Length: 135
Image 1: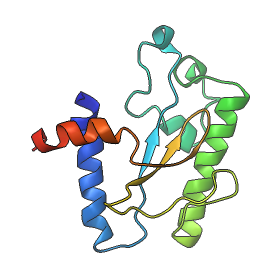
Image 2: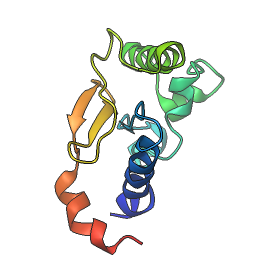
Image 3: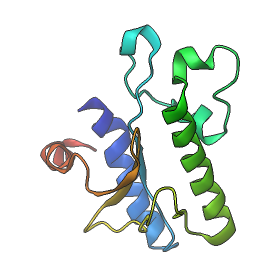
Image 4: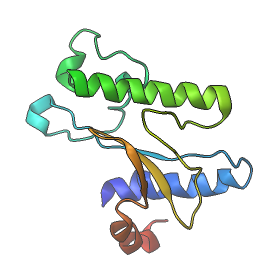
């Protein structure tokens, strides 16, 4: 609930406001879990950074972000999405498929994790339950 209240709901609100000015607005959810402290961090804030920037091989990064073929594939998919967006204003590419632009009705979100794909309103029930209480 804390993650939804502090990150997810405000991010979706900003996406809706941004979409009014820029139709090519996208939202993602990073679900890869850190192996650090035997998984205690889960998919913590900023864990996606070594995947986005391709720095999984930096010293000790494997202890925080993980390593192996799945991690490398996730990193490649994220880097390709960011590059596709820079090139064409659309982050969709062969590795992840179609990534629809944000709209507040369907709430399409690219979920980056062990498998990456678009989901409509992930954790929607939880969001709907607490959204009225988030300032």
